[in-house]
Length: 129
Image (cartoon, rainbow, N blue to C red; front, side):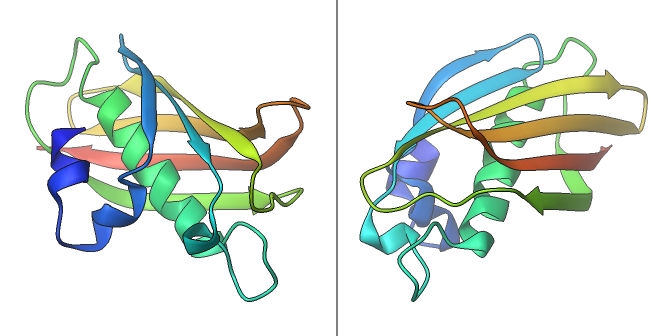
């Protein structure tokens, strides 16, 4: 989290992310949606959700027993079901499905914390260096 909070680059967008769980290839984070996270329609920006999926799944993967080095995104895929608006609290939940010698496969959901509604489902494939 020091990395995100001290970032001067693109990752700074996620500086208000609160990591709840980082263990055994799993990552869980929470975020209160603020204006800086929204698109012109006032809903959670799709590009920002990709960033959330990338960051939370990457941090989770780093805690997997089969991963000791760096990793690079190979594929990211997201499906959008519902939106979030300013003031909503969201959870980003990532699970490492498999981490082999060179590839890792992760699944991620972004949910509305209050209602439990699934907003976004994603998959993330990473090359393990």
